[in-house]
Image 1 (tube, rainbow, N blue to C red):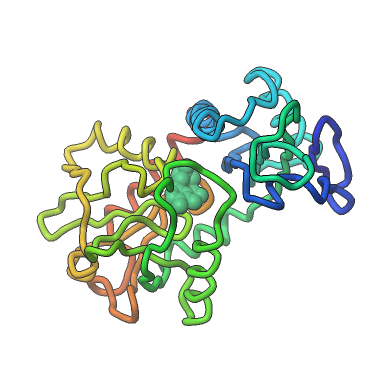
Image 2 (image 1 turned 30 degrees about the vertical axis):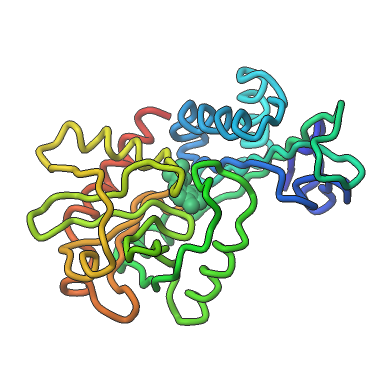
Length: 283
Ligand code: PLP
């Protein structure tokens, strides 16, 4: 495998950044993840727009122009011979002697990696659906910025794994679900209306979410961008999450309680197919 690190294509096994990189010391870095279909990035511009926004919010310099970045992204895909897979991109503020203040004159560190994904394995997972547990949302107040400061997500997701589940639904102090451990969350309520939390600083504006809402706009399914509680999720017809990694993933069990009959529902299943079809067509 080949990684791009700071201007060079290097063997993945030997790829490294400096020990005083601020991504490493302060989580002073942002990232993006794309899925790759047939060697093409899905939702390319949406992810690049969000990367620009994350960098802007943290006042980290843009590492290169968008056309140059696209060349590097596709070169990493090509060198790793990725047909179906994922691309990970990270930009840190740079490497400098440890000090909280922004260092003067440093250049951001850009790292890009890619790996293949077996779409058949993912499809099988979507056919059974996943189990999740709820966890208190102890994350910071700027979850809208895609930073590598993911310790609450790491701890919550490990708690899920320890409990025999594969993800979490984060719950705010009022009992409302914010989002998943690395995905946006939705329910199909008893009236058939899709609910997903509106975009605030408390959740990440998922690119898959945006694409899904666009797809839903041309159907007669009603969508409400409104928060829903754990109780509402437990009593819903369907629950699902979306992300570039998992695409559309049905949830069939929350904290040991089955959702409906414990099988993925028709809405999530149809939306998964529609998202994939759309992603391939637009890639
Ligand atoms: N919410 C969180 C916390 C995430 O980490 C992610 C993706 O990793 C998402 C939502 C979904 O975002 P996207 O659809 O852009 O992958």
